[in-house]
Amino acid sequence: MIQEIKTVVFSPTGSTEALVKEVGTALAGKLGVPVSHDSFTLPAGQKKLRSYGPDTLVVFGTPTYAGRVPNKALPFVQTLFEGHGTPAIALVTFGNRSYDSALSELHNELTSRGFSVFAAGAFARPHAFATIGLEHPTEEDKALLNTLVENAAKKVQNGNFSDAVIKGGAPVAPYYIPLGEDGQPAKFLKAKPLTDPAKCDHCGKCAAVCPMGSINKDNTDEVPGICIKCQACIVYCPKQAKFFHDDRFLSHKAMLEKNYTRTAHSEIFTGE
Image (cartoon, rainbow, N blue to C red; front, side):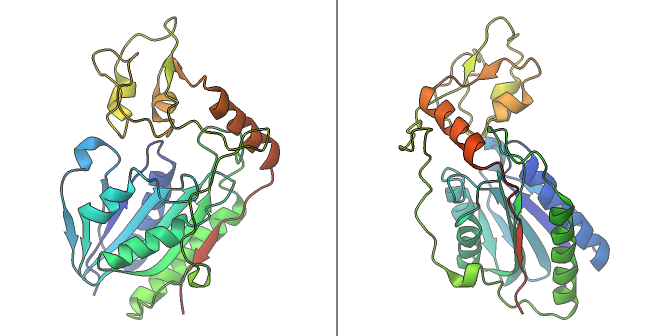
């Protein structure tokens, strides 16, 4: 019998966290159990092992990067979380293009770690850096989320934790290759945020919110570590001093804004 709900999330800009908390809180209300929230977004949360038993329901979420679970967050999923017949709901967000294999990958990784993924969903949200998907969450998104919660609650109440099969069990595909406006691969792995000296007051907020701990807290102009293009430093900068000026990155952004203006559809999977 479920005694508690834990939400667990990797969410650099907060969109995935909001979704996961909404699902966890709504489900806790329907089941009459407490809910608590956990994050492995920042380095401080990327060190300890979490282990859950069969009486805890875990709602686990990540964003979609290049059609998959973010590759720098994947090792944390694989090493920091351990289920013991633990029922779980897998959730991903995606920026109005496609979630591709992100949800399948998250489902598979959680299953391999001892979780029973009995419900899952991929929800479209505004893109992290391209101006697309601003209409999300739509009424359709909200209705699907409510349906997910309703179906998940019924399964819990019936003791039915049958597997939520994602896309008919299709295998995880290779990473999506970002394209530029010219249709060619846009290679911007080494791109890093720059700082507008006229706006920056070196408050240190960007360094504090970087999930990779890559910005020098003593000199926030410097980014000596890996940048995963999550946009946290840009989103949370109170002075709007951070920006990207890499030609291929900006070309990919323009391509998305040209080709993905249609409203993407969210999708849920709740098994039998």
